[in-house]
Structures are given as structure tokens and as C-alpha cells.
Image (cartoon, rainbow, N blue to C red):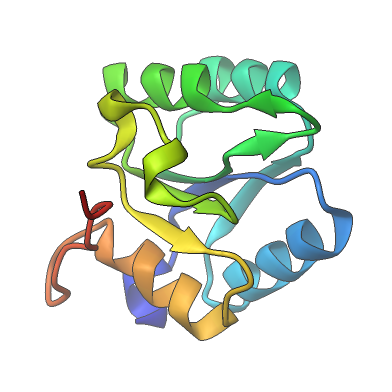
Length: 131
């Protein structure tokens, strides 16, 4: 799995400091280059619009602001991404229910594997939301 992330530029969008720091540390440990972490939507959209990205990890709720507009921006730029969230699938807008989602709290190895799956290869694609 670590090889799948080696050299990949991954945007981390998370407003909880400790989760963002843990994600950054784990990703750097795989050889990925972390962009961010961004703790709010404006910063995340700026990074996504000005930096080449290979993938992104998005918290759905950034201090009360949903990250769905960023997910749309990433989709239009063909940047694979997944959501980390405490929200149930029914609370996610229909247009984003096919985006892979990992529930919080999560185990870091599970997140690393899900990110690696975004790149395909030997990995099965991550599962989208269930209806």
C-alpha cells in the first residue's frame, strides 16, 4: 500500500487539528506529499485551484460549512477523493453519494488503504455510499 501513495500529492481537508495532524503524519509515512492540511473551505478551494493534486481527503463538515462545493471542483478536475465524516449516508446530497466515505471515528490503516484504492492498480475500488 505504501508504494501506491509514494510521491502522490494528496490534499487533506480537515478542521479538527489532531485528525489533520494524524492524517498528515500517516500520509507522509507512506511517501505521499501532503497538501495542506486545510481547515476551512476557502483555503481548501484555493489549494485545489492552484496546486496539482493526485487525490484528496475531505471532511464533510468544516466548521459548519459543507465541503460539497470542493468535491464538485475536484470531480470536475478529475481528482479522486473521499469523504471522512460522522454523517450518515442519508444526509449526503444525492450527487455525492457515489463518493467513497469513511465514517468517523476511523482507524488510520483503513484510511490509508482507502486512499490507496483511489489510485486503482492492485486494489479494489473503494465502496461508495449505500442507498
